[in-house]
Each structure stands twice: as C-alpha cells, then as structure tokens.
Image (cartoon, rainbow, N blue to C red; front, side, top):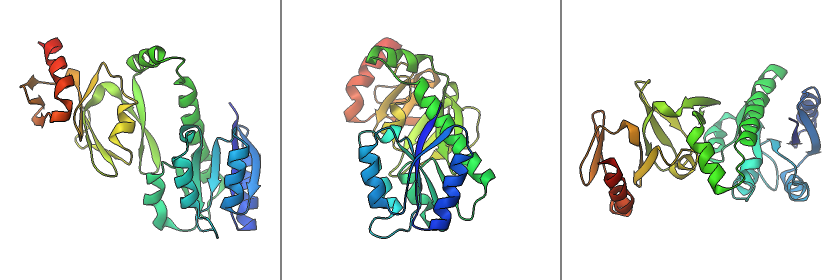
Length: 250
C-alpha cells in the first residue's frame, strides 16, 4: 500500500529534510511540498488522493493547527490524517484534539520519522480492512472484529474488545475500563466516535457519558446496571433502548 502525502513547512531546511525522509520511505509518495498552509489547503481540495500531511504548526497567515481544524471538519477527515512536525511541544494537547497520528518534535531524525510513519501505515491498513460495502456488511465486520486502536499519548494502542468493561466520556477525552488492567486507558476522542467503532450487539449506550459491555453486566434494575463494583445509571434519553435490552436479557 502506497500512502500519498504532502509536506508543509515555511522553513526551507525543514521542508527539504522531510521531503528527503519521505523519498527514502518505500510506502510513501510525495505528492507535493508547500511553504505555507493556505497553498497546502488549496492542494488538498484539488488533489483528493492525498492521505497524509506532514504539517508544521507555526506558519504565517494560517497555522498548522488551524489547517488541521479545517481538515477535521471536512467530510474526508478519516481518509486524510496529519503528522505534526514542530519545534514547539506546547501544542501537543491541541494535536490530540484534531486526532493527529503523531507529533514529531524538531530536530527529529529518520528513526523518529520512521516510527511515526509506521503508525500511519498501520492506521491506513486498518482503515482499508474496515471499508464496508453496506450497513449490513459494516455490522457484520464490527461483530467479528476482536480489537480496536486507541490513541494514547504519542502512540496507537491495540485494545482487545473482549477486555472492555465500560467506557466513560468527558468533554475532551474518554476513559476505557478494562478487565485486564487496574487503571483505565485515557484517550482524546469523543464517546460518539468510539461508539461507532464498537460492535452494537456487544455494547450499549445507557447514559450521555457511559457505554457498557453487555456481557460484563453483573446485575440490572429498571434504572441501572452493575459491572464489577460500579453502578451506572440509565438516563431518560436511553430508557427506551435499555428497556428493549431488559426484555432480551431476561
């Protein structure tokens, strides 16, 4: 699989280095190089085959973070991902909010670059394997999948679906509680995004902030479920779907 990418950096030396690293990587194809984000944005619209953007952050007119936010709001956001390349570490949290695949701090070497693009390769391979033909085939795929990938700090972590107990959502991140881990995993994504990756036959959202694994429920009432020692209440918004689950569960 070849990944089509572009490099965006207003510093000529950095732009040349990234372009050189791309040319040395067999599964990357450099489709363009740009010294500012506005020109890069135009290229993204004109070249729909672009999949990966190596993006500096501090640039005139339009910053890398601003460009990433535009990409995150676009319809093809899942097929167009970003690796930030910057000399400033204070933007790391912002990079998670726009679901960047990685965050390379300058000066980085080819080894650091290779680790980042290997994660990108894994992401696109996973996405390619998940392309559904219809809603029915998508549901069938979700039912059969055994694991998901979660962005944890600077890496993608493979999580076995059968180990998930429940998931708690907050404003900017979620906690995933696992049967094989003492502490939950923190990942910067939304509860809705993660819900779409989980098999609906195995998981149920019963609260604005909670998704539970059905096979991990220890006991139920009309308004709550218990998983291990944790009681999670059902909110009014999800009462109807929960009532349906109660009928099948009993």
